[in-house]
Length: 173
Length: 286
Image (cartoon, rainbow over all chains, first blue to last red; front, side):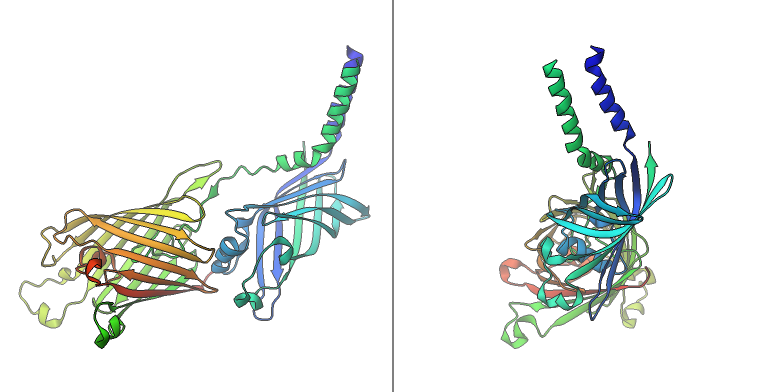
């Protein structure tokens, strides 16, 4: 009986070895550079988990936590473009596929506006004793995520959005 | 034994397979989510909606009402007669806004305050309604010849309106609002017998696209000497920096007391006023 249970116990112990780092106050900023108007919005409530044992990494944020300087833009962003009532969250589920020093490459599925696309991004992953710091910058095409900008305001919003990630995750359990 | 090994292998695989989802489940959002954007504008048609300018945002609104559609070609079907209300509303914080406005034909200055008590939410905290209280004071200017009358008091020029706004966003298209209203007149209009008039407002919107919604609004009066109720229809169109609202109503007025209790025109006679609102917002403070 004990022999039978042994692998199970082993399995449990493997589970315990997993090194999870969690954050609930990460920052994701996006920029749209356009001739007439640069648009910037910050979300300071990004959650993230990184498991250093298997290099899995997950991000999640609420679309309506993005703050714009102009509140009307925030309204349009939620109501017309990202439709946050239908698609309240954006997630990234991926894996660190390469790590040389601090330079990391991450690959995974990014879901925005209900559309999931595979992306790859370069970034920095700084491991300290109790925390992991993640920095990254990558570009997202609005068309890929079915976000339509009416032609009348086209000049105001860039078709390619720059996304900047800054998250410090703390060791958990 | 075979079963056990199989079981463990299954466990092992499931453990690997679910590890990313497991990470995601660690992030499950437990905060409550508010229903936002119940109406497109701060007004359903004429009356206040539960929406208010965001904190630090100044909203400038120009409201136009033309004459009645049945006033004939000589008046160009009402377009010759126009009256305006211009107003500024400012969001002091997330819950409180104040405003001031001036109506041309009524010669009235009104100032209002709106406070949001609670928001419709789901998640950790669930509440079915968004509730606001809204109050306004109207100062209707009388001519000097009026004030020379011995009985005339300065306070005669004031009237007050108090509303509780109860709104619910049913789904992304449909929102409803009920507005129990108390209007107090210091000086009674000729057809009224009591100073405090009660009414109940009903409003609704249907969003036909992300940018366009259809609105309807009516009030039923309870103890008024005037039994004609206002009925208004509107279309809200949201563009880059503006909200345009087009209306058809049997009332020409834009302040609570006037459109609820001082409407004398009938839809059935074609005494319909066409009007529109344009609002523009300015971010004053981040």
